[in-house]
Image (cartoon, rainbow, N blue to C red; front, side):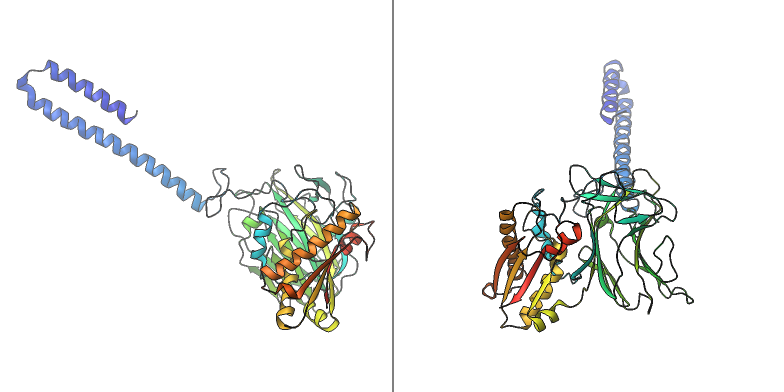
Length: 445
């Protein structure tokens, strides 16, 4: 019963007593009145205590068991965190316009200003599933389980959905892997929440076995996707006849990134292994890859995804030879070409994960104070010729603006141009060739 209702009833009772009892009983009335007031006060106090207790419990629940009440998770400012119910943008590699980037794109570039990942300059494998039918398993992959190419919501971008199962591997048809190479891909999750198993995650394996086993020699990284705790990134290698020299848990909290389509970058330089989630480097192990071993197979595995609503997808997988210091090439040869600077679909908005290359170019210009550069953009053959020419020029100009506005390079040291689709270096009939053709050149003047 509400405190106000109780007070009204008490008041009515006292009023009747005041009318009916004689004046000689006035002292009794006063005592009853005080008792009623104390009772009302206690009732109100209990109600306030109860509501305060409930609010306190809610706050404690949110701290100790975040997401336990099926509420949308929020960031530190109380803003909803995206739940990974769809990709942030359409195909970031196609020249065919499928939507412009939002205002958040350019704002995030500054976050990547110190990002030091540099992708390899010779593409060995690229797949965005553009030539695969929805519902089919992709033609350039192998598995001992199942999986299918899908689209999410209204986006035309295609994803490979990994179907959970025991000891299931997904293996892209990457050719022979050299000593120095990089791996990049976009990861998408749906349905991950506080109830997702702490063991739920994706295994990225470099192995000497091209089939469906761990292999005698391997270097593995495991990325967590659970939400109710900050789970570690786990690193492990194995050497035949020796066992595991590295079996570590790297402190990390990638929960927000997991829900917002993170970009994963890996660089392998002989034995050294580095891993970034978006702009942040979490792993840098000097002797992770077993020495003198041939880890010629890249594999993916997902585990502990048991709830039907939890799903994991991958797209835009690129493996490229190189990933070394572009500064030396530019200084020694006076020219460097890279397809590692990516743009939003049909626009000149630079994708933030491309900033590692632009950072290295800025370092050359800072070191060589007299050097001037010509920046030239190139596209693949998708879309109209004239539009591609215009787009390539805008993209070159965007790179110049990044060098000027973020790294304080003088604008008069930089010229820009665009060649559109007129100077291909790869076959525009397949994704690998298109990826090679989408490039930016830096030429010493």
